[in-house]
Amino acid sequence: MAKYTKSTGNIFSDLGASHEEARNLLLRSQLMMEIERYVEREGLIQIEAAKRLGVTQSRLSELKNGHINLFTIDKLVTMLERVGIGVSLRVKKQRAA
Image (cartoon, rainbow, N blue to C red):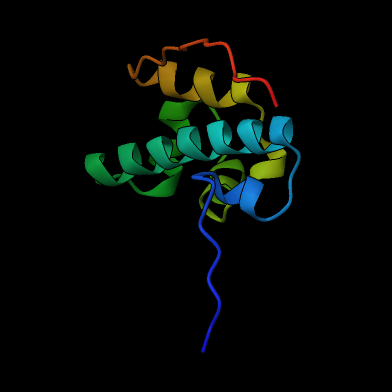
């Protein structure tokens, strides 16, 4: 019988990333998914979407292919803001480890 481990709620943490890195990766992945939803919702081809987002088509292709390590939170927020999607941030104190 297979053994299952309960998820922490953050796949990156589950895969062994440090807490800080896992949070950063989770935030970036959420922003990347929002960009992908925007492109799909608008029915755009990559070249048009890239133009609206202020990046090259090859850069957008990297995003769509999940190259998370190539994108900063700052760049992803800028891309979303360019197309009128606001990003807000909530800061909260973490429980002691």
